Length: 309
Image (cartoon, rainbow, N blue to C red):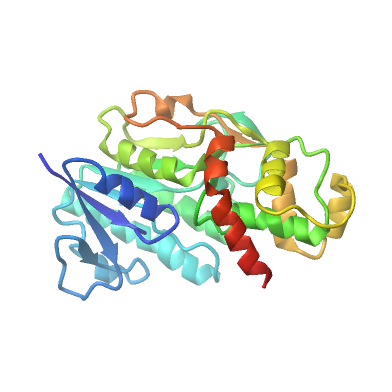
């Protein structure tokens, strides 16, 4: 029996991996919601619709067995992120319920819990306390999905080819400091983007995973010292002299909110534990950080070299 899977955000960093993983599954027919598709001309692979214009979503979920929602707006003014993440998701969920979609999965973010520290936190143990407009609207999107009986996936740091935030941001911090940072002891939950794509599809097709929210990361948290060493050794080694301590780094980065955010990545625990997510799932958490990062390092080197120009 063929499963009709409707995907939003198929051209994004995570959504593209979900699309590839879904298309690799026998018996899964993938359609993607696209604001570029001609209105009124849905075909076997695309469905017209724009989350920022809810009226365009009417009828978009018809015929879908499964909906995987990866689209979100990250950054921008509060009105635009609300329009897409909150109001757009609300309208999409209403269409999914109306169409009788039997399975809904939303790829959200652990940032809905705020900036920590979190150490070994399990689902339900931390309050929803978003610290930015983007995270607040994604928390609102989660409520709409959960109200519709859907499954919410909360990765924390997602790395791999196409990542323009986690590793490039650390490179930017090191450039700002002209040094690396010593004394970084935080633990971070991480997952490579290809594994996340496969996991989202597996969860969407799983008979064992009901509604609710799960943290999605590799079971082994990554020490900040290991993350920083991998970036310095495989992507870009900072210029300047000896490593600086955290207090010195904070003083040097004081004028750069982005650099300070990524310094927090090295100094504040964000470790979310959820072994239950992987149990009975037709997908494993895969190899650990060192191996998956090594595969994407050439892409990172090329990308950060371009940003220096």
